[in-house]
Length: 254
View 1 (cartoon, rainbow, N blue to C red):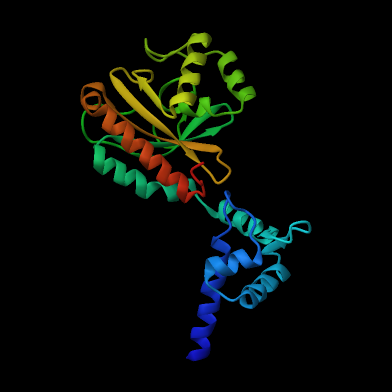
View 2 (view 1 turned 45 degrees about the vertical axis):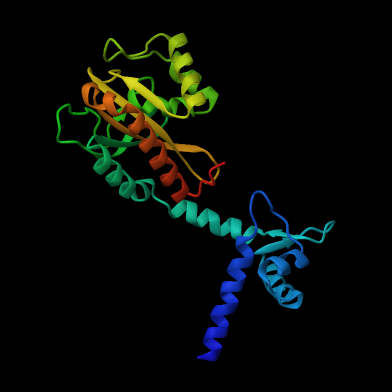
């Protein structure tokens, strides 16, 4: 039992050590680590020796300090590949649905269009025409946020390939759409009025992965008369929920 407890203690110490490496402080010296962890330098040295031998840390040949190694990058890629956006987002979508009572949508970019990959539909009033598996244009409605965060070359292709009109509110003028895209980038979310469905309002927020890349959008959509009185509250809820999902995907909030 004592040996088992000692082994667990060693594992915990190692995890504590690795957790000290951050974006703000990527390099640590042995003395710094020992002081921060409250351990003797010889103990920290043994831990680092083992980690270095297995490529979990590397040593800077100039400063002699340590930083995280390629093995952790490999493991991070495994985690990234195994993460399913729908699976990670679904619990947060359910929570947002309970808080708002409005339709909650999850979409990604596929080529030069968006595609809805998950949906929780409100039973109240206005029905959202977007359904799971349906391709949706990027110039209108809740997926416009995705257009704002695509590589500029792809954004230009969408804008210059002909903009389909669905309602009187659908932006079909490239110059107007460009201004809307710039506004989305500046404020961090998208707010649309009746661009896909007459009388609807959509609030969309970005979902980011560990590289800070926008890989999807989370949105609520509902009738204007019901959403507008609580618009500021819903924007806050959507932004908070989007950040929570993003953190599940490895986003560091920077």
